[in-house]
Length: 448
Ligand code: SAM
Ligand code: F3S
Image 1: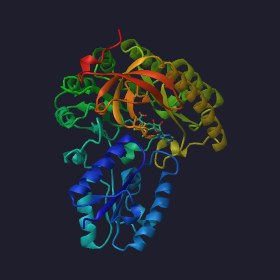
Image 2: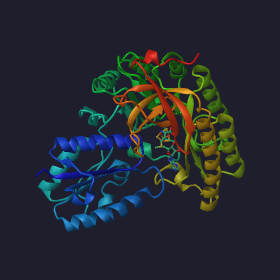
Image 3: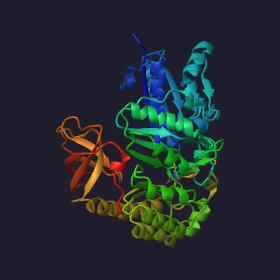
Image 4: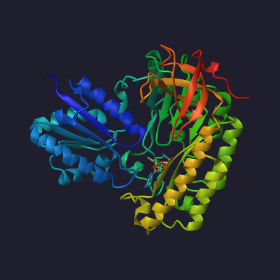
């Protein structure tokens, strides 16, 4: 009988995609995926170190897995991702029962590291930064009409609160031709929408050929059968006029952008080393809205950054009102070991928590207004999967990244459809199926 592998992942979409890559790699190595950790012969944890007590969560889950291992001697435990990258060998001091430690850039070496562990009889650790090595693997097969394509690894911006440059390494981009080849293969396998992934996608470059991120978007617009392109995450200081022009000129680009602002206060943005002011952020948003009227905007905020005063915080609240975000993630600042901000005087936890609750209330109200404004409108929706609550319905996303549940005719799943939005619910929309959409970007008209 084939050995079984259980993969658990935490954190961002890049980690989700890395987890798919890991499952695929281990299945090719003879494992069978299971959803039951207690029966696995190999347990893999793909960790996230971006926020709050990440390492604590990892060690408490590893404690549970240790019991599985004690019940089934011979079970192996591998820990990857950003906590593994940060801790390296030190992870073994706290969890000596772990067999393999690997990083975001060495995940393709997992089968070798497992073999080394078996051969040498001691844990194998490799959290080095070999760059783009993992992309030599065949990409994981798509699980529906929407797929992720990682276009770059790492980040070189070093925002003062962020652990990513230390755990994922410096920015390194895949070539234009590697990305195009992967996208064409996905389209041939039935994919209609791709989301390009990178910690800072605007920094993508094909240095050899002299292409920047806007060039990549224009090249993707030429791929026959590709109906929609999204990308995340954008950095406001790196979002070029070329990318904004692409929103005006390329119907294939979804009318949606996630553009993390982090704070509305220039003083805090300076301390964070973000490289833009609140006015410059607003100016980018205005340019985007001129290029693509109605574009849906998402963002990230951090509250309680060291030194944040009530006045600074009020500027974040004001930004929510003036910009009007459709989607947002907001977090209380969490010191990340080894980052420049970690040594600074913290804002008291209770103050940060109270500010977060106030900000989230405003963000939720803004998101509700954005959903309600869609009621009665006709939207192009990619019908991605059966709806979670059954009833034979399907779920899909609008161009603006709003989830819609609706009843659709047989065979409609996997394609684009015109949908009338009939109601705005707490987190989703309801819609009525109108008609299928020809799968060509030209059919998804730009607003005039
Ligand atoms: N590359 C993206 C950008 O340009 O901001 C985001 C990367 S980060 C993995 C995702 C989000 O986590 C950030 O936008 C930020 O809001 C949040 N984040 C990162 N470090 C944090 C920290 N130390 N404390 C709280 N939130 C944090
Ligand atoms: Fe982190 Fe800033 Fe890069 S938030 S991922 S260092 S753009």
